[in-house]
View 1 (cartoon, one colour):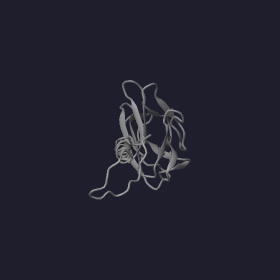
View 2 (cartoon, helix red, strand yellow):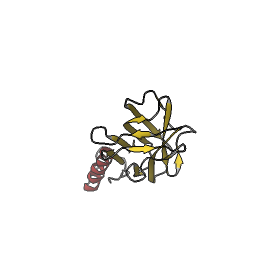
View 3 (spheres, helix red, strand yellow):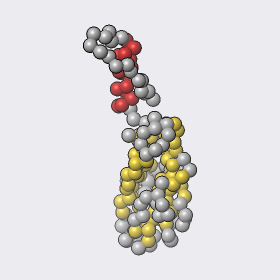
View 4 (cartoon, helix red, strand yellow):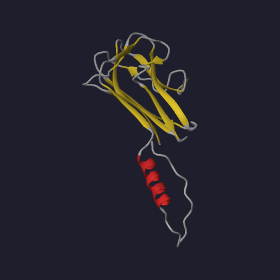
Length: 164
């Protein structure tokens, strides 16, 4: 992971040293290499009947990044279905053991037809995190029946966290 180096202000006539150039190169690498973890799931679909928030996949859809204390953009891009019409499935992010959304999470789409696949996606910015390691876990729940989040080769699921 590239690191940021604080530099002295240079004035006209100052000699630029090798250390100054190394710091500039390191700072450019830092800016071009964000702290991130993005996971594409294409192995098998996920299902839930839970009426309380639970991890979708506590191994593969749990991301850990080390931040410098900047805001983190977390996103989900996927597709889902439900066994019943007119039923909701709520999605949320757990950050270091605390969910971001309220009672119904960050996103609570109501499923209109059990015969079609619907898109589910969100982008959420988390500010105020301290510098250090943070874990982001995708969670979900449904009010009844069975919800399915697709994560197969034909319908992949993407979950990611990027310090911005």
